[in-house]
Image 1 (tube, one colour):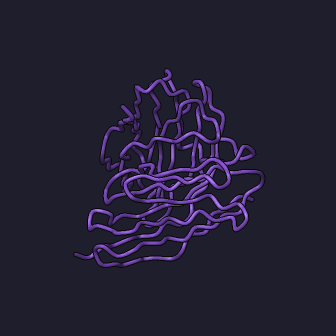
Image 2 (cartoon, helix red, strand yellow):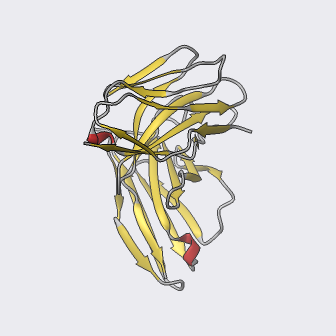
Image 3 (cartoon, one colour):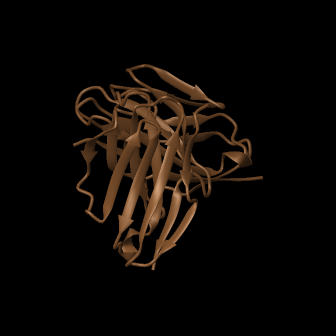
Length: 114
Length: 113
């Protein structure tokens, strides 16, 4: 089973709202990732967790707050977002985070900020 | 820095045509190379990968060979189907870049029956 699940599939929020995106995998992977994808663009890395510790933050604004409660679960907490944050948010996982490993992607959460 | 350049799309072909999508890269060290595919409204799926020079990745009739001398990883398929219509991303990772996937801009492929 190489499935990464993400909820919700779609999310509409106002600029003053607080919401969370959830990502789950049961492949025993120890590296998990958040990517942001704007329309007709490639995904851009936001955060990487390795063994439940934040290992990479690609200078993401603090209105995005990641959390890794356990090795299977990754959350992205959203607060005071801007309309330009509207995008597809993709979660991915890999076995240990080594360079040659495949990253398995979820279907994404499509976020609209009004 | 590390980068990936893909041929510009969109690419439109007829069913059963031969497909090539060019991909070249710039990287320090010896990157691992990937092709991912994104179907409409979905996330990315790994199509194939190669982790060292001269390796050939293959899957679902698609092939790509890791060419270190030309820093290329071109995607090919001998006979495309309508169901191959999607966006294709070439990507790399390097030891120096840790776990970061560096993507090309993507090539939108449309196959007409």
